[in-house]
Amino acid sequence: MSILIKDTTREERERIVSEALEDFTGCGAESTGIDYQLYIDGIKELRELNMEARENASRGLEKAFPDDNPSAGCGMGF
Image (tube, rainbow, N blue to C red; front, side):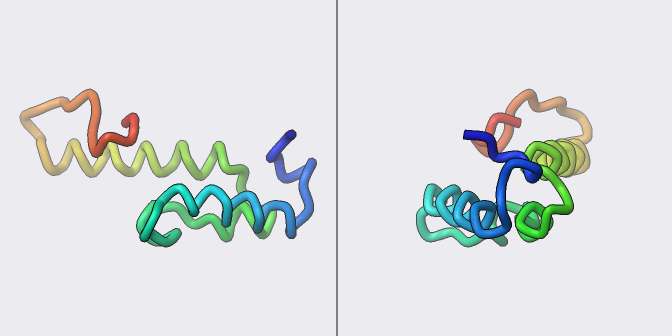
């Protein structure tokens, strides 16, 4: 099953996001740092949103640990 915007309806994208966020028990969309509404509205693919979140997390780690170059952070595969 494709999750690309061109292959899904708005309702399907809402369901995809809702089901994915269920994996974050006790956490809402805000806790992921990703604006999933952009995907639901057909503006950005999930791939793009995830890539941007990784880049932002990497920049945050670089600022928090300027003398270190952590290869992984937060247990989220960054």
